[in-house]
Length: 155
Image (cartoon, rainbow, N blue to C red; front, top):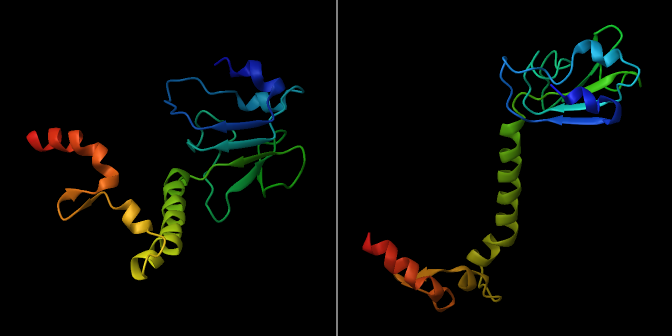
């Protein structure tokens, strides 16, 4: 790995690339003891325990996402315990949490901003403006899709 070139100038590392065991690690555990090693926070999105990030010694959880790695001893400590530690976030199911948050937020927006128009009188015309087809025909606003629809129905 050539990542060692960046150790003296990197404070934050966000690792989210696929790593194969045959590939080199980004740095060695011994590198964390170098005087020019500056990384103090690592977000290991891939969460490959003992993988490309040697300080990822275990996974963490959404409830407790971070832990500290002590470079001098290799011990794991509570997060933000000492300034010389490296804080690691290695939530093993983080990629699943992101769509969950997005779905929750989208659902909240739908409930707050669309549902009232569906259940009410829609005085602002939001539902009418969003309706692409009605009674099997494109609405006037979406007539520009007519060629696409004609091609799609020919197949």
